[in-house]
Image 1: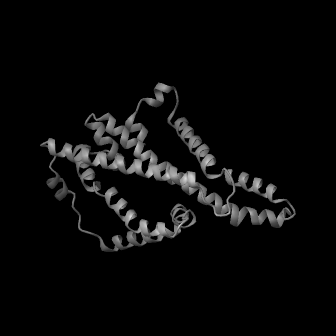
Image 2 (image 1 turned 90 degrees about the horizontal axis):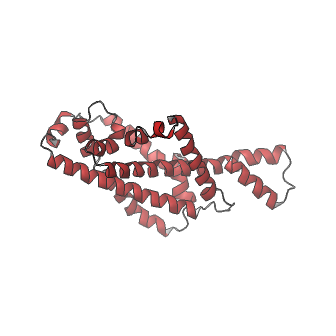
Image 3 (image 1 turned 30 degrees about the horizontal axis):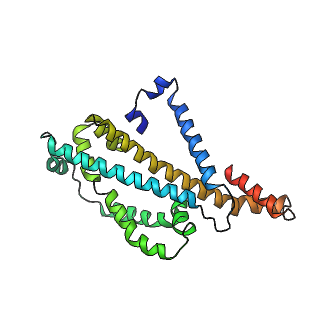
Length: 241
């Protein structure tokens, strides 16, 4: 979706269809996951290289979102036809308390129930001291990510009626002919999506191989007499698959 907004004619110029480009992206993510997530077997299941890459992607995402947010505020300040107060009042809805409570509960459960959240918070944690830093750093990160959500939504609804709200972060700079900022927003979204897919894939691969596939193989195919080296190689193949 983001690539179609940034470069709508890219697929036709390259001679590919959109689904072909999607397969290229999937293949690149698969190769990256194999290189950083399943290079070797570690009894602690720590993937330092992968976590460094995901942390860098998180910084790219935050910087891109803040740049887009400040640009949209500047755009709203410079253009007299964009009146944030009127847009805010016209789109205001009374809060739905039951829905708010349900969303809050789902968010709280996601910390434990989502594989990528649990894997990053528990499995990849090497030092207990890191949790003390995460207690204040993670809320600050979330506040910064949500800082410009409402202004972006208001400006997008005022300028781009009929456009999907999911693409406002890219569509608004594109509408203002700020192609560099639109490209930065696309890179930030790509970083967020790729990090989520990679960590989720590795977490699910570890869970399935440890709790489902390997116990089944040990019971059915009599792998108990194989050497540790053979089992390690087999486990790597299972996780990469």
